[in-house]
Image 1 (cartoon, one colour):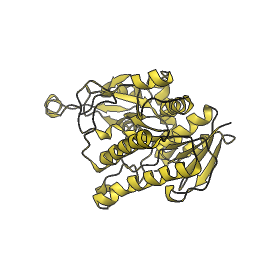
Image 2 (cartoon, rainbow, N blue to C red; image 1 turned 180 degrees about the horizontal axis):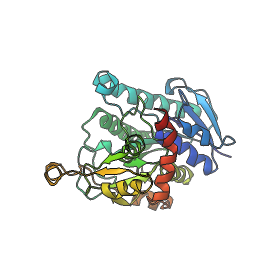
Image 3 (cartoon, rainbow, N blue to C red; image 1 turned 135 degrees about the horizontal axis):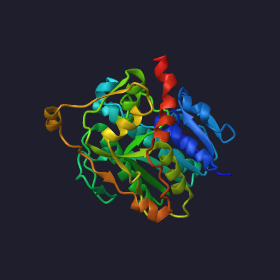
Image 4 (tube, helix red, strand yellow; image 1 turned 90 degrees about the vertical axis):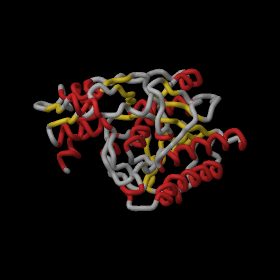
Length: 314
C-alpha cells in the first residue's frame, strides 16, 4: 500500500484531503504542529498516522508522494507582522518541503495553490494558460509557488505539480490564526448556527463552489496518474450557484433561520465579483477525473453537523 505525506493536515482543506486519500486506499502521514480539528476523529485510524512537526523539521518518512497543504491565508495586518514576514511564512516552508521531497526521494508531490493568483478575471471560464496577476501578499506567494513548481518540473526534472483551488466549502471549516476568514459558505453556516440569521449581501451573485472532499479525491487522481503533462491543474467543480440559492438551502436546514437581503439601492451600489470560474478540462483530460459532488441540502447538512459542536462551544 502506498504512503502519502500531507502537510497542514489539521486545517480545513488539509484535513479533508487526508480523509479523501485514506478513503482512496493511501496510507497517510498527516503532518501538522497540532491536531485540534474535530475532523481528526473522523479519520480512518488504520490508514492515518498523525505526525506532530513543522515543515522546517519533518521527520524522515518513507513515502511515495507528498501533498503540501500548509499555508497562511491571513494578511500581514491580521497576523500583526510585516508584509515581508507574511510572505516568508508561505515561501520558506514551500522551499523546505521541496528540499525534503528531493532528499527523501519522494516520487511525486502536489502543492496547493489558489485563485488568489488573480486580482481580477473576466466572468468566464479561466484556464491554466491565463497569466497570474496577484495583488495581495498571499496571492504573490501562491504565484511564486506556481512558477517555482513549473521551473523545478521543466528545468530540473522534478515530478511535481500545483493544484489551483477556487471557492471551497464543506465540513470542518473553522477560523484559526493562519486562516481567520471563512469561505462565504462557511460564514453563512456559522452565522446560521450562532446568530439565526444570514446576511445575503449579493443575492444574485453566481459563484463556483467545490466540496473540500472532492479536492482530496481529485488530488488522488493526480497522484495515481502514470504521467502528468503539465505543472498546473485547476481543481474546481463546474457547478455554479447564486448566493441566494445557497442561503435558501441552508435556511431549509436550520429552523427559524432568517435571511436578510439588501435594499435595491444597496444592491445597485455593490461591485460585481472580480473572478470568473476555474476550468477543470485539463484535469479531466490528463487524469479522467470528473466525479464532482453537486451542492445539495444533504451535503450542506453534513457540513452544518460538523460545525454545530464548535459553534455551541464558542
